[in-house]
Image (cartoon, rainbow, N blue to C red):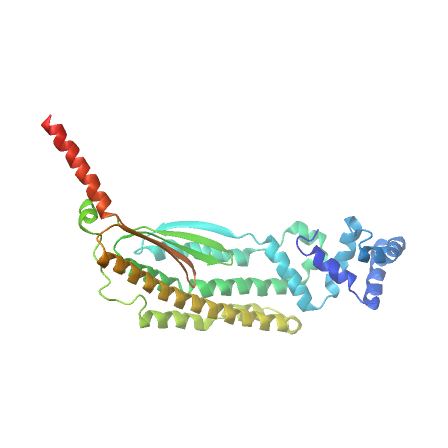
Length: 341
């Protein structure tokens, strides 16, 4: 009926005080007649005990009357659940290189983020539940949209430094076969494949691409400072959304907004932690690969996944020199045998 919040509203209905319940039944009678009111009053104990199911037209009419009388914070929670139920996340796929990723990825990110601003509850639902059309619901939706945008901003602000880090990772490990990075946003995911330069036959025989890191750090101090500076604007989109509300709406949503600000701070701290942890783990992966490279001339393969500030990075490193040499030797042998005949 209300897609995801029926049980919540029903629970509130059954827990109303006698005075609130009496007011609700009177309003129900004004709208649908005295006999409907009497039936509801008489049947309420059975609905509450579960002896009789509250369903159909009666349920829709009664439950539709409850939200307007609820405290704004409770209504905010219901609207949040409705939005989460109807909000359809989108996924996109991008193939790019470390040289052109900004031109390829950022437009897709911007397009995906717009989903939050463009979202509206289905018209059919709003027509059935009149309370969804009032200004308080619109105000709550503005706050929720701004929070989704803020969360996307927290994550996307790390894209520059994380893609630079990916390039640095490749520079440290010349046998990198593939790198994928999934940008995880409230509006959906963007699956990015970062194409790697194909090795020539000679590189396969005598070693992969040259190590170009030159002892360079995965993340420089300047890059880290730049990322931190971007995060200083956290909450600006929420402030803009608040400016559009009336003073009464601001007062009603005070606690929800305070919780939202706290949530943004927590989200930022978690993103910072993921970035720090993934930088450390990438460094350990480089050490492990270098150790394999130096201690053994045999083939090796390393697959690693890193949870980052903006999403997830997957890397595949593989050295198969011996396999290539064997294949080349077999081919040469076949050619020689053919020439001897």
